[in-house]
Image (cartoon, rainbow, N blue to C red):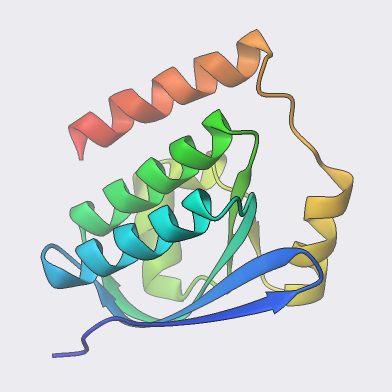
Length: 140
């Protein structure tokens, strides 16, 4: 059954969630949603999801990634992805979500990217991206 396991750790001022198992409809998606909401409530604005241990992700899982991205963006935060498996990468390409998320193969590079790429949430471009993502999430 490959139930989702989430291990939280910190590197500099970035919170890293190591995900292992499946991200699919039901308890797995609920657990990911709760983990992200807790971090956002605690004021975390730099979150990196390490997907190296993910064997399966369904449309509900993708929807939760988009929801987390949007929630963080609205408060001036960022959600980035690390170590996409071949299967997850292909799914992200098919859904065109790879054009939205910053994705990295190297953890150090991913962590440093938070330091050099602060995004301005007040920009019209950011609002347009958010609207597009919300529309995509509805279609998942």
